[in-house]
Image (tube, rainbow, N blue to C red; front, side, top):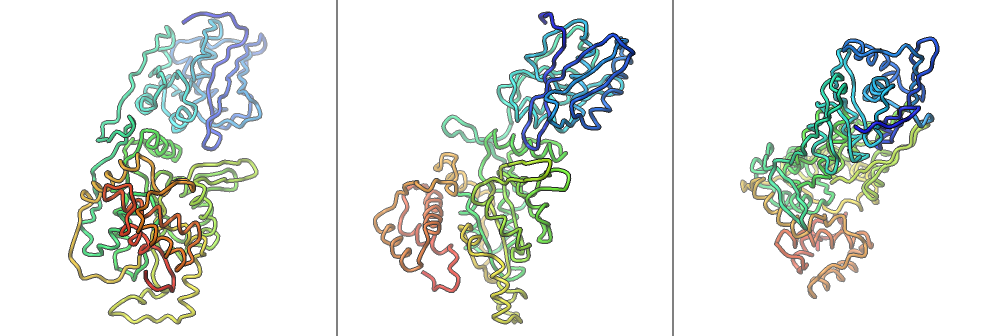
Length: 496
């Protein structure tokens, strides 16, 4: 590597500030004074402890530790830094203090063991994914994960002793080995691994059709029915027929997994979160007293969020759910942190028809009064209902017909290709739908008869377009619109 003349060594590293990574300059100064070693610049406890790890790693591998006063500054000094991945840039600052190599073109991250071994940390992958630097120096353990990130040159080391001659080995990029379809030259990956299969659900063909339409267009769905009718069975199987994922989506999901402390997998399987109705607002949306922690809404990003027993969720949770459903993002504000994160998910929910659950049952008698039923259903506000595009009331079904998840997923792929990788539920308000003349007449009648708001009209058209896509069409026919209207929640209105 080219030698340069510098008075102060600077190495670029980074820290996570919520969900976003920010660059940090690791500056080093060596002063002729009583030997000492200090780190300044709002470093966390793990960073302060790196002094002992760095010193042990260097001395245990035959490197000299300069008999000078060493001051390491993490700049900018007003930004709080966390993570043991600062070990490597600090160690290199000391190792090359009298050689002055140019590290300015690299982002340097890595934890050190006392024996000098370089270790991966949970923050390295999300930092690099957030910053997307041109070149990185990382532990060999981290390289396999990072190699999935496009346009990043990776130079990996397994031990501090390998820096003596500094001959970095460039790590080759790795491809995802899953089935995929190509749309506009872009790959969308998927798995045909149906751990929970729709063939296990007997009958309920209308509910399964609602689930298929919901998945194909990423439309929010609400299933209502008595206990045991199959609501949760259907929703739990929807995850395995969700549309394919782009590399960017897979990386985004893995970034959140890494920040949770979980091992990254790079599977094209969208996340599925099903919090209990007793969950607090902080658990659902994120938060905390000391900092902004990740919540279920963020963990469900690019996947599904399932609320079973919808009316039993806390009122403020249900009301605050309206914003992420509309804006696809959530802002957490705390004294020490203000973080905005993406919350683009399919919202699935299920509820009983009444508090006792027997209102629609053929065999059991409902014990609820009209007032109790109204109070139960009024826990869900109209604005929240308005953001749910598909509603279906399930009744006990003795039909034994089945359809496999594989068959349903094949239809999802057809619709996904026709949508060109963009979900119908995410269409802009100025989108021009292609309707046949008699379909347009039906729409005008529905607007007048049901007093549809602009949002309701738009939702009906989006669902109708998905129904058409499942039939390999873009043009909305009369039957598509009628079916879409049949999946609209109408309260006490008569059927269309």
